[in-house]
Length: 523
Image: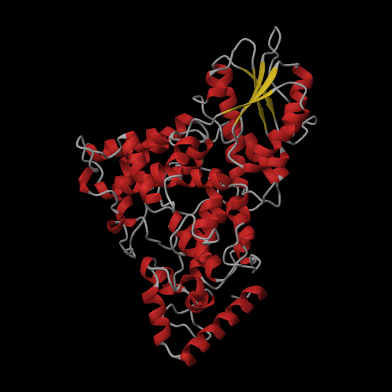
């Protein structure tokens, strides 16, 4: 395919760039466009598809969604210039395609929406200095908390905690609030009700699968041809690729899945990649859905008696609270935030994160889900792959690149603070008040993974000892000077001290043995 789209009859006013994660008709860049004189530019470029080793499903999802969005814009009367990846004249960078559009169309100006990654913000700044026409930066208005609103909240506080930010957002938008200004049900947070261990017979509900049209089939062929060594499994491919399909996914989740989400949101079951989690984050982060409509749908289901309060509140907190908070953290602390390595973790990312080849059943399961679906739910990301990276001392930059690569919903604004701050505690406590380190006991309690594992979650030392156990205690011992004063950890160190010197030494020796096995690819 090639560059497609007619040139307006008269002088081109603005070339307006739409990025792959900005597929929203409500953005100012589209709402302010002149359909007679402006041109909408969309481009599939190799630089964006390869700056990390993106999952092939993510590439296919975004290219198909982009192509469908471009068709919807054309039907709405916009002039769309669409550049496919295989266009021989494609310069394969966003800056290059903006320059080519300016050369071909001679517009009065170029407009871009604030990107979700610092590297693109810097790239557009550099382009602005050399471009022959003015480049205007427009706000991304899809989020519920502007940069200014977050700054006003953050500047009043010595530490930034999501829970208090979340309450502010609830008040701002009147979500799960009563007329007297109190939270619905009398509490802000029902997380304590959402930690039920799994029933071994628990099975997630059937999920939607969307029929592949000619556009999607062409994209799948393109991705298969151009990314033969890409990470992950391309098909089966079930993604929604239009707003209409994403809205069906939302409706299905609210009606059939959310009622059981709360009770089971921390549970993990072998062979069940989704359980009762939503699959909406990829669509939300790409612009096909809006955060407020999702929160309002969940609240309405609660008000109608269809969904229990703990499920509605827990789900809304992820979007209205955590998602907005994480974005605020990213833009407040970048670009320095990406360099944080507060625990001086230097271990390279082991190959098992890419291959899934490990005797640890929990890691094998979580990575298998990731490879197959470009998805794993937040407990697997935090308490399995993230937890292991934390206690094994894996290098934050490597772990960040992995998370950014392998998930269909990952963009740096949301992935980086979740990885460095929440999973790795590498940011010195900006995001979290304590490290989310856990032993095999937690995994055994909240999953059925350990039943078929080579390792025993009840053992800390020996050939069959669960690696999470010795690595957990070794992590705490390594960083005792940093965490001993943490008010949430004194009982943990008291337990460590009661073990006796010989036992502690054996555990720490076992941790080193596990790390050697990890480096050799035999863990």
